[in-house]
Length: 244
Image 1 (cartoon, one colour):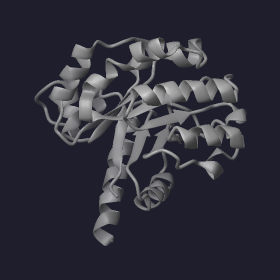
Image 2 (cartoon, helix red, strand yellow):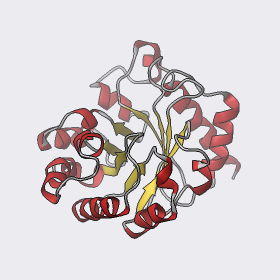
Image 3 (cartoon, helix red, strand yellow):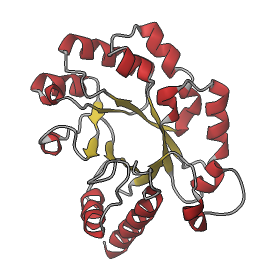
Image 4 (cartoon, one colour):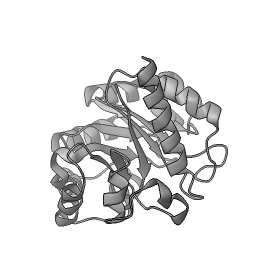
């Protein structure tokens, strides 16, 4: 199954402009090259329904958005939000309609797993959001069997991040949700480092074996490496498909 290769954000730096068409907005030009994007600005500020509708109308029919949930619910609210608060944050995002591919829930590094809190939060979130949901926990306690149970019950997939925030995280990557979601922050220096040819080739081999919808999001944008890495991965996946 072909992966949806994406960038965290659709800004097109001058250094990467040659890979995109010259006409249209940054989003329109970006969507000519990639079939998905991860919206991170939604983590810091609320966007209006009209904004999400406009974005959805701007891109091709096959394009999908991944939207990062507001930090009010995760980092500030620590998953204690009421159903009404969750609905207030999520309802505008649903204006993307069928172009909402994934809702991304990133947890703060110091937020440890509490079964009752997590179960209640994801139950409420799942009731409101019909789209695939993926979670990026960053505290060791989220590796516990009880946490895996919460993900399984509410059909939440768990992000496979690089670098992995928790030891041995990759060994228990859960497939409880409907998508596989890889978030690549750059290594060895997060957000700054480009990925090696060896890493990208190895990743392409792994991703090509996925049997469900797969996202690969490059977040190493600080020195503009994300687009080049994503394009290389696209080319590798196309080559693998031709061989197959």
